[in-house]
Length: 297
Image (cartoon, rainbow, N blue to C red; front, top):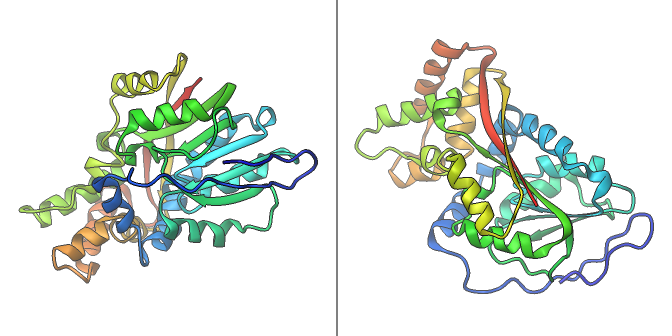
């Protein structure tokens, strides 16, 4: 649990309970295992600027951190939102950045740094939070909820650890139909591997987008006020090859392809790159992207 919060400028003291055992489900474990090796760094380098930086700025602006001293970030990944949150955190605030995957957290530590006394990193399961009731003023999750195997349980846990008046702010992708770059990559995989294409993009990050279902899940967690906002932003890669590399080598697609006996993805990347260039331009490769931002209290 959290033993104490700072009473003055800077300085967080964290004492966390041991994470609960036996709560991880197979689907989540397999996804975590797929973000290993070179995948986290490729993800950060190629998908960070393409997808996550623009929405990190949007999400952090909505966080209104001046009103929140105790902030929990779930599924922080490689620390892109973490960096934005830390830049806006009050001097006497604390930010606990968490992810189930230690490999992603290591990349986050390298890119964000861990010298700021207001910041701590911790691996944990978002479906079983090891904190007392009312520990946080704000919980933030960028493009992580889609990965939680028991979304209703994660909502209940977030609601429990929020203090009275606290807020949960998260975003999720809309469908592939509204996100052209990953849609073209998925189409390429489907066309080149018709018997058994990797379906990670369609099934997980871009697979939980029904607004009514999202709202029902959030309310089932105990939240009374739920607001869902559609946010369209530009999505620009320096080259089509950069975009293809990010979605093929910087996601669990890389592991799924290896499991299918494909250890050299260069041919697949070349096909995806050409399709992207033909439809969206080569240098830069330019499209739009759509996500939904959920604010619950």
